[in-house]
Length: 405
Ligand code: OVM
Image 1 (tube, rainbow, N blue to C red):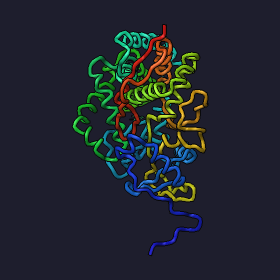
Image 2: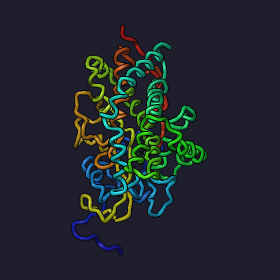
Image 3: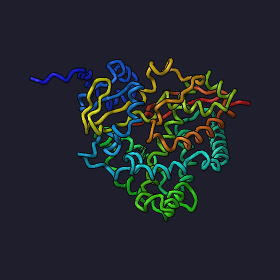
């Protein structure tokens, strides 16, 4: 006989769905709808984790770092029992107080005032890229030619890594984001490259590998000042290289996909290019390039009358929260007239994306350059999704453009 739950405590609804199955990764919205509808907490029987898919509970968990810790890993693996695939991040996979020095250092290096000197260069580089792409014809793959190409042109230089081996950046990030999921086929597919990619990224984090100016040099300068230890400095560079490329690639791709499917919103942006930043934010809400993160309960946590046991994993559906109809009106609409602030696509609270200002600057540069030259664009073929345990992104966005005169 099972014991009756204590008064007021209820067993949550359960689901045997696998959110990391290809079917759901390719088209997550039906699953998101059913998880939100099932209740504020859903027990995922396949993984024995509790899932949050409503905005209110996802937001509450994100800001409650004391009870929802990151130090046991923010993927499916519980670092209390499982060996991490690489040394844990000193930012993402750490809690206060260990988290705080690296966070403060990187926050200052990536803060808007520190990025001001990049603005003109990045705008010029965006114009140059857009001119090159458009000169080659009216049809191209906007994913490869723009969403991938632009971050790769500006971000590694801004960090200050050398010219060789940059083709490893996207596969490494892709692998790291797959590694937050369970050990499924997607993780297995990356396994043969893990050592090679990890060694290359590790080598780029050394002081000697970095140029004299750039985010990397700034991080090492913080170590010289004593704001970071010499062990932390290369780890913070590693965070930039892990989290700074694929995320912006798929964030920009979300913008391009949004505008290809919403031509009236493209016209709105063309009339008012100062909407570029709102457009990026709304695209992040709408597509949520980072779909999920886990936390671990530091104590028995009661969420809406369900007890989540101490030491167990909680799966937060950022993408589902960003489409919760109790928080957003017509959430499935990409809409430049809404205020997308408060979305959890960058997370929320202590761990909220520290690179978001860099991402916004990249998006602003690219969208502004495109808005100036492209009158309209539409799909010239089927867009193809990229599949990853955590990232919602694209493999191909074939478009045909009409140029502005
Ligand atoms: C990190 C990091 C931070 C955010 C996301 C991420 C792979 C990694 O500190 O390495 O995804």
